[in-house]
Length: 158
Image (tube, rainbow, N blue to C red; front, side, top):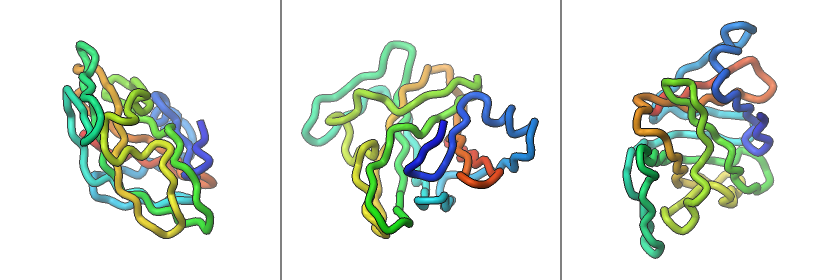
């Protein structure tokens, strides 16, 4: 899957396995590390697990039974000369090699939601992505390829 806006390519569920078979260089990053992709700078500021999410003005949303919400707070800076909307395709992979896209029912239930937000050139935007993962997910990371390179970034979240 290619993320045209970020200049990254996610390889969910088999990213690490594929990387081990080809010339891919796996670069492990942690919360607080800044990564420069083709079109953005990304820094994950923190991660929280919650049973319920809510915003100042919306109604609270509770995770499905047997699941939890994972809220990822990040800084994004558009390093191009043109604004673009942040697409909802950044994937988390858990310890059982399962992949998760951002939670689709998030608009209005969390403040500073990043999916579909306009990212102007050279201005840092801080916000949140929300994922719903099974309760048995004990560790997870974002796996993202840097476009035009053989680099695979694993951003360890837990």
